[in-house]
Amino acid sequence: MLSVNKVFNKSFELFKDIKTSINLGDIKPLSFKAVDTYLTCPRKYNFSYLQTIVGEASDTKTSASQNSGMVLYKVVTNVLKESYKSGSLCSLENMLSVYDRLWVSAVFNNPADASACYEEGKNIISKFYEKNSSLKERVAELPSWKNKNVKVPALEVKANADIGGVKIIERIDRIMSLPDGSYEVIVYKLSSAWGLQSRAASLYTAAKKLFPSRKISVVFYLLRENMKLSVDLKKEAIRQFEENVKSVATGIARKEFAPVKGQWCSFCSFRASCSVWKGFIPDKTRMRLSFSKFNMYLTCPRQYRLVYVDKIRLKPHSFFSLGTSVHEAFEKFYTYDGIMTKPSLRALLSMLKESWKSEGYEEDGVSEREYYKRAVDMLTSYYKSFVAGVAYKKAYRIEEYFELQVGEKALFTGFIDRIDELDGGKYEIIDYKTEPTWPNERIMEDHKLQLAIYWLACKEGHITSTPPVKLSLFFLNFDKKITFDIIGNGSGAVSGIDISRIISENIKLVDETVEKIRASEILYKKGSSPDEVFMPRQNDYCHNCDFKMDCPLFII
Ligand code: SF4
Ligand code: SF4
Image (cartoon, rainbow, N blue to C red; front, side, top):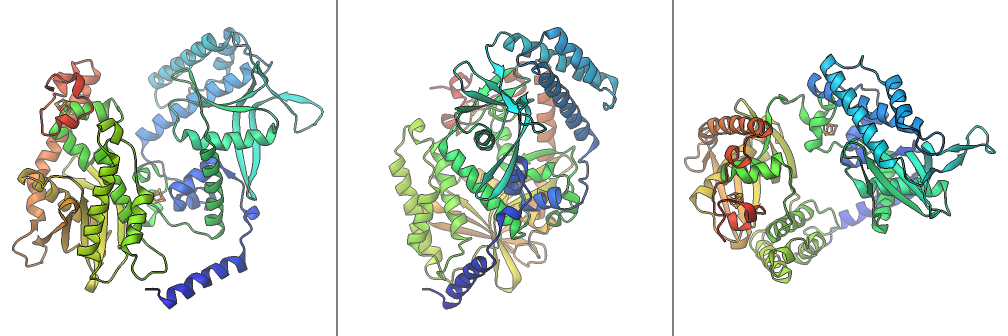
């Protein structure tokens, strides 16, 4: 059923937008970093680019190590710029003498760090020379900004482009003219690159403005790895980048600077000034643990080592994709802002379709179609049992990020699926489970611990104005909701989850686990046998483990 008020409000908003018609050209030119910062957290963009708040250094240890990386990066990239000034790479002797001239050891806290950093830089330059000295390519040329008739080498080029009336600025380290006449746009990075497609789209757009008729390719030069990473730039990435620029510029013009909490808050220099954390700055010596990270170590230390120490990405799997798709559909459903007073079952199923992830089915040898049908069945039953007969209400919070200090050594981080505001200003925490089997007693205890941590996070982090009164699990495959009351905290309940008991029973385990992980990591880095310090532990999930094929305990 349509609400007349909602229809009117929507039309009025649209009218207001047309009336005020934002002039995106008035926005300050946007760098890629500015766009990325806004997309991550608009409040951080506001702090970084529009306000005069000076970011607080996170802690001396981090800032010293960030500085050493930054010094190394700046010196090495400046050496490379100087080395290409004649059009092609100069000799190694010249490069190293420029390096010595530019090197600054004064910024380091101690001479040992300075010396290690200096040696690393020298090594990077020598290896770079070895790999690039014989290449048959030259630096492209551009008209000088001082005198258009004079050509200068395209080194450290500042390029501007225009996307839908929004000015963007890019900085390209080097543009090379390749033997086939095309141009290669190069950006140096100290180590492995992130957000490749998006940054490449930005660089490509800027370079095309400079050289409209040239074929352009984009390359990230990873200095530590001494390798070129050529980006296979997709049209979709360019389109997405343009969309992002326009939506960021619109948000800035409308002064939309809402904070968005996430893992990135740990590295945000404005955290102490940010309203969402209410002054909470976690102790940085604590180990960050998500619930799944903690559980993975307890289930199998070997698997933990491969994922969290060696950082081997887990392969896509049908069960991950199904879970993510269903969670995303619920996220859309419970943040619905359309004109219906209650989104229909059809709307929920079309949200599922939009959110569907296709990865992992082929790899697992299962039918994606069957899983999709299973997801449709789960959501249909859910809708009939828990939505159809009651009034629709948007969630109070969805995928709420939290950080919680547990015991002496751990900082638990994670996302709460959903928090509902109930009548009378009370709150309920909700977690969805999509597993195909009913949990045994041990797994149910894990679920209770997880809910207890969520409850504490809401209370300690002031996510809800009063601590939640209900903790609920939806077992979607069984069309079942289990709700626990809170024992203690003045609730008067005699059954449910006793938060103080469950936390105090587990604090020791959490602290001991952190200690064990840290000790194992030290031994592993010193060269001890990986499977001796992070021992494999056979468990119910071995058949789904990505590392089973070379695991000493796995039996086919
Ligand atoms: S602390 Fe987090 S939410 Fe606050 S401004 Fe920084 S990134 Fe945004
Ligand atoms: S197969 Fe089992 S024991 Fe081996 S690493 Fe994987 S989870 Fe651990």
